[in-house]
Amino acid sequence: MTVGVVVDMMLGLALVALSLRVVTGGSLFRDIVLFILFGLLVALSWARLGAPDLALAEAAIGAGLTGALMLMAYRSIGADTEERPVRRRPGVALVVAVLTGSLVAVIGLAALGIERVPDAAGDAVLEALPGTGLGNAVTGVLLVFRGLDTMLEMAVLLVALLGAWTVLGDARPGRVHRVDRRTPLVGSLLTVVAPITLLVAVHLLLAGTDAPGGAFQACAVLTGCGVLMVLTGTLRPTAVAGFATRLLVVAGLAAFVLVGAGAGFVGHAPMTLTGTWAVYLIETAMMLSIALTMTLLFARARGLRGEGS
Amino acid sequence: MNGAIETVGLVLVIAGCVFYAAGTIGLLRFPDVYSRLHALTKADNQGLLLVCLGLAVLAGSVQVAFLLIVVWSVGLVAAAVSAHLIARHARHAGEPHASRETER
Amino acid sequence: MSTEVVYVLAASAVFGAGVYGLIVANHLMRKLLALNVMSSAVFVTMLTVAGTTPEGPDPVAQALVLTGIVIAVAATAFALALLVRLVQETGLVSLRAKDDDGA
Amino acid sequence: MTATVLGLAVVFLLLNLLAGLWRIGAGPTAADRMLAVLLFGSTTVALLLIMAQWLGDASLRTVALLFVVLATIVTLAFVGTPSDQERS
View 1: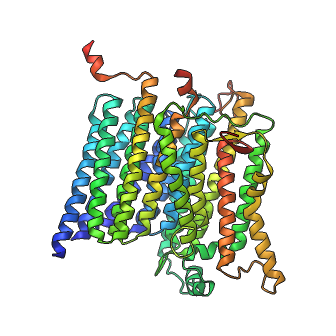
View 2 (view 1 turned 90 degrees about the vertical axis):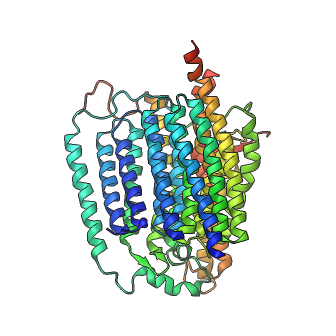
View 3 (view 1 turned 180 degrees about the vertical axis):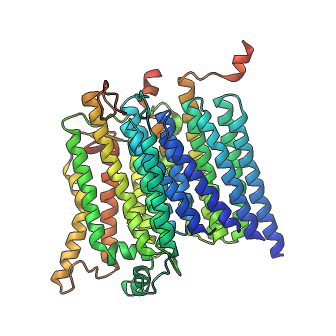
């Protein structure tokens, strides 16, 4: 047994132990914290599995953003409102859980046993990748080979935001409880971290065509920056979505549609990306759209405005 | 020569791990939230510095070394702010201070 | 035991734990946590069983999982917005009335 | 030799993480639990950096950078809270 497999086993055991603690009740706050740590360990697992693209996304979204969302919602609905963490007779649930878990294990192990077909989609992608001018196969799949899926994903995000706006109703924008400004270190944190966040986001976006990174990872980092600014009160949630906000929220979807349809007009098949410029254009629009959507979802607001204005 | 450089790098990484262990032991053993915070933040930052130095030696590339320096400095800022905020929160929540408890 | 087998087994156990939590939890936020745990398990399984190419895990599976992660957080954010509104309107954090013993 | 030592360092740091889990279970205060998040954050960064060298995957260093940049968000979400401001 190699050191690598020992690391895998420790990660696997920790994941199982954490998930069991998360679901078996107790203090909800403790379980949210455990869930954040669960996300961190999943990110480490992606690193071990050789998928840095996913480690990047998981680190920012799975661990950071989801955790922050949960903590904020926990605070909004009041401290431990949980009277009875679990139902009284969990016997049936236990049986169902064991059965479904075993089912996943059987399917997974059976799938591992199957010989990989020589012309699987992934291999076809790697073969066709040089023709697209991209170096990162994952970006290639997302934008060139399965662009339609990614476009519809942007639509899903838009629907999620619209749904949240509807639920928000005429209520005041989410009360985001800011960190006390009298805390002197918070200002310096923003001065140091915010510019670095922006740099990292742009770096990920540009590097994403050839190295791990891309619009999703970049948007995750940018969202992190937005959330930081909301939490420190640099950005204030508002009840009205301004024109710029609306425009930016649909920019990703719009860029996809325009470039995709445009390709049809100049004689290519629809949704063909005719060069790296198209990839960069769509990725930038996607990054800004997703980041703004997520920040708005986080702040439970229709718009954001700067502190002074 | 190469072997010697590699050994230096590995020793630095191992030393960093020892500091991490010290931080964890402090987190587990110290009596109140403030001393746990103190043990954890300081030891872990020192550990991260040593690990970064060791890895910079091992990688032997200026680019990587620069990236490691950036990681460490940002980590320093983040750890300082996080520790400060948590300590402040604990103080406002009125968490007891172990040494004062024993004085009474 | 290989890396793949370890992760598939761990992911199935995590998935089972998620299912259990989803069924027994009273608090809706705990149900959400369980759902997120389940989706992580699915992602790990998907990537592991997709097999590897010479350049790391299958890029199609990676793209699918990446999409999934982003969708999952958007859905979670929407669900939390619903939950906060529910609490504002009814003061309840579960879907059952206070006097309903359920079980 | 180098690879084995780096692998063992990863195992050692993972053990650290698992030990830190105990503090979350034991609490006793919310601040104690957030301390465990700090431990996880800083240790994960070291783990990712060592893994980058160990597995020869340079992009894991970018992941580590992302981790430290976003490390404060959870803490801010924890302290920027109504209960905090009501008390102060």
